[in-house]
Image (cartoon, rainbow, N blue to C red; front, side, top):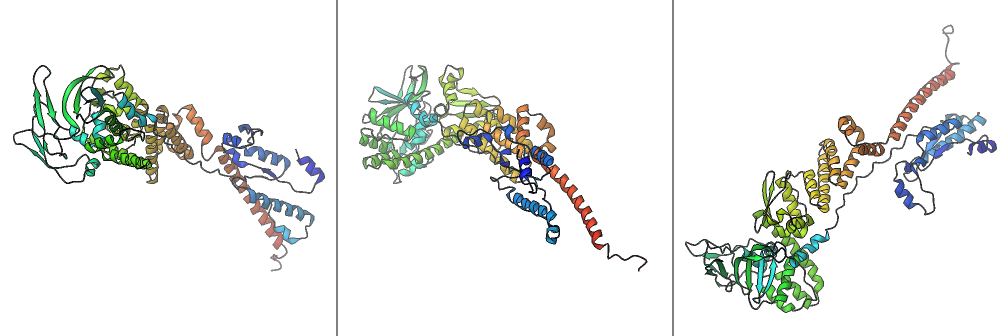
Length: 571
């Protein structure tokens, strides 16, 4: 548009053609348009000119062509250097007698710009779902699959779950580990020790001296603070059961026995552990203690803080006692750290119970074996499990659930995540199998954690010199099928940034991918197609110019020495 006017008014002025904003060729145009002014015209993909268009215009006008990008600091020095060369060459035609202008080279070729590799996408881990935070509280309020019933003041019944109580209080762990069946009636005498009470809350494996009378089967009971004996009381009749007197073992409990109780949620009878509390335990403070054992939190507006502290002291729940003291001393802000430490210890105890199969109430049948689990923990942390065990499904009334196409290692990883909200890497763990199972169970956070684990393992193997291209190609469509979108994006990035190598080694696998994936490969491959074409053109023109320079140098050397060469006759 401007060339004719320039040649009319400035006929002897050299001209070069410059293509600006080279970075738009590989930039995200949506992000660029969002950053532009509101009223500016958006940039469309059709507005970005390929290098061939610039060369064609430059060839028509007979002028050199260069490209530049201020954003990438590319080509700026080339433009000014070659503009100076063009001006000096133009002056050389007018002032041919100046010898220093003869050494000026004509405008040089510009090497094509190789766009930088796109950084690998970051795998983001979503926040812990509200179900995991509020699940224990909701489970206590609506005790589905309850296996413990507390009797308070002879007529008040509170339902709870052994796994929650045992992993939060060592006193309850001792209580529910007692063996009070008809076949094993025993007398246990516990000795008093001067050991620090706090150590009992830090481990489930505290060992103290227990004296068992001869010829009697030992009870699974660790030592307590109280001295005395545990008395067995047998009842005859149709509902024969054995009741264990706990009055001498702990001030909080009166007796414990097994009994078929109607579940308040489902209305179905279930065998539960019935614990009769001492008359000094009241409903309100004990309910607050149960809420703490489930959630690790204590409401500062709670009434009867002194009674709560007394019950916490009797049950050896020292974290709760410390929280009550902080609230009474107007230092409630310190309770957050106590809650964090409580959950860490609870998670470790839950792992221990899972490893030892303590308090399990459901069995998962898998392809390579079985694994025991705890319904309350599953219900409070997974909506899918809550619907399975709380709905009108056949599995809700059974103690066995089948999981086809699932390995024991994979289910172990899922259970540890549901129990602790963390993914623990294991040997022989297949990430894609775990992603498939997490997708079936509707656990997006577990999917994200597994995606992060799979990507980190692939990067680690790549740094060690292993070939991961085939594994990435296998992961791609499996991840897309099982809603592992972040891992799929990571695989697409790896394939695109190593496209030439992968195409050379896995051509059939690349062609077998879906059309959408192949289109994505062609659009985002690195180096891009336009760069490869520009590189070929640059190398071709460079060789042609080198040949021209060789011929020109030969011509100048002959002209320079033509008068100094001696003829054979003269010689």
